[in-house]
Image 1: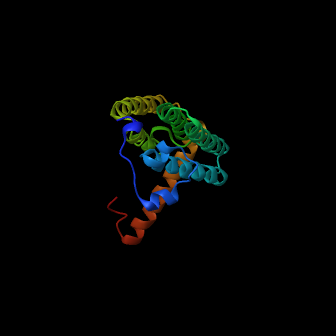
Image 2: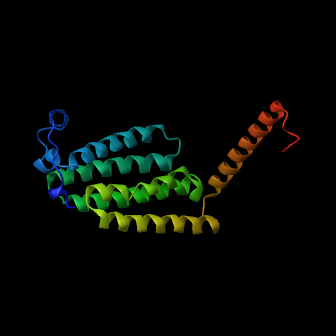
Image 3: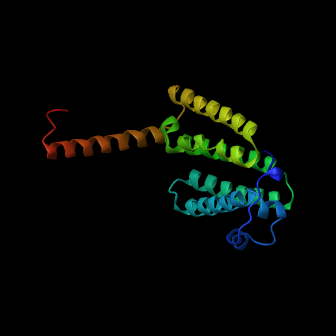
Length: 185
């Protein structure tokens, strides 16, 4: 269902939350909540960029936040919402791939976020776009699995994973020793 034909929101709290300078299609359709969510995600990514210890993550978080803000501004000024959503999803995919590459490959926490990529086009621009992004997400997940099996992960990540695995193993051994179950394992 195109965004112009979407159900309208008529409530007083919603009119208070959204700025009056937004175009009518953002104030009266489902695009208003998405715009606020994009702004919140951008602010969150911007703040997280200062907290990340990894320089590559800091850069990608900051670039992704700025790109989302620019895309939302362009959509407000007239860029078709579908184009903005697709560009945003490409940027999100690249960001997630970069995060996964620098934090464990296929078994990175970032890989779980690929499951959410098709939801944005599902609610913002239509089912056909969501199916296309579902297929893209599956292809990217499969490519990451193939890359992981071929060993395409930075050496520092291998060392970090091995180190954290040893730490978890030592913690588990210690807990089992205290519980008297060390002989079982």
